[in-house]
Length: 217
Ligand code: G6P
Ligand code: MG
Image (cartoon, rainbow, N blue to C red):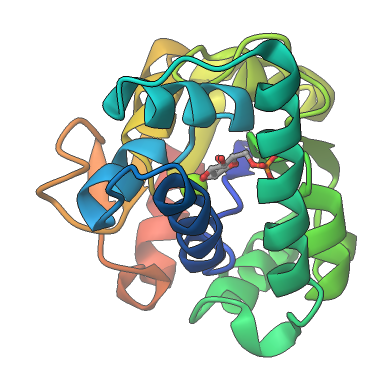
């Protein structure tokens, strides 16, 4: 019995959401636009381009294409300065345990992330070796909630979409998993991830029995 297990990165494997928050907040505030946790929640799982478009629309701002590119690159430079200090300590609780369990059970594992920095981050926290496939922001033309990222992952794992399980912390990502006809597992708060098939606060709440039931059903 083989299922495809697909993991989002930011907010699921590592807590980089806090660094995206810091970098977007700095940028938004420099443009005189308010940026709180509420706005940040809406950017989770959302591509870099789309995130900046949203921030500008919240502030009723229009800017030139050159300025847009400049701001995107400034945000990423700032974000990378946070990322460069990351290490294994920033892996979220029980993520290695789940990855090892899936490996023991010979289940194919893929990353399915919107981030163009995904490979860099996996290397920094030394988790790259756990993945049979990596699909990230460099590989897709349509961002979450479009299912493209997860459908590519399923193809690379050679598993049918309906036999894939997706771990996601964002609304856009859960929608993408559902649209791909995969089993969506929300990691985070029920208030936000209501559309997920299952919701857990974090991986410490996921038992071996639950993983076994996903593999068997
Ligand atoms: C993830 C994060 C988003 C981020 C996106 C693009 O989905 O949740 O907050 O905007 O990736 O990340 P990147 O590293 O390419 O800017
Ligand atoms: Mg995420």
